[in-house]
Amino acid sequence: MIYYICLLNTQVVFAIFRFRYEGGRAMSVIDFKAAQKWSKIPKKVQELLIDNVFCSDCGVTTIVEYTLGNDKLGVLLKGKCKKCGKDVARLVEDE
Ligand SMILES: [Zn+2]
Image 1 (cartoon, rainbow, N blue to C red):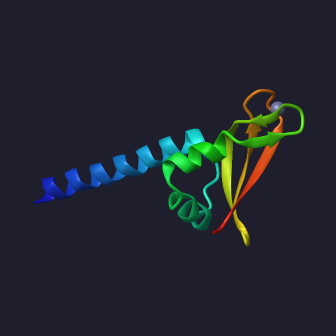
Image 2 (cartoon, rainbow, N blue to C red; image 1 turned 135 degrees about the horizontal axis):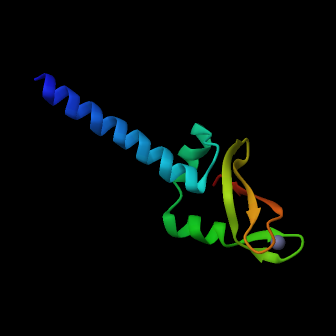
C-alpha cells in the first residue's frame, strides 16, 4: 500500500515536472484564465495565429517565446519575432 502511494506520487510529480518543462519552452508565464481560453482554440488555429503576427520590422512573422495574458477582449500573446527578436504581441479576440 505504501509502495503504491509512493508510486502514485512519483507519477504526479513527474506529470507536474513535464507540464512545467513543456510549458517552459513555449510560455514562460502562465495566466490560468488565458491558458484556459487558449486551450479551447483548436491546435491548427493556434498555429495559424502564432505564424501570423505582425512585426514592425519584418511584417508578418512567427511569434516565439510567447506568454499568454488574459485580456478583457481575449487572449494576449506577447513574445518575440522569430526573424529579428523584437518584441511583438497579438490579441486573439474571443468569439
Ligand atoms: Zn521582426
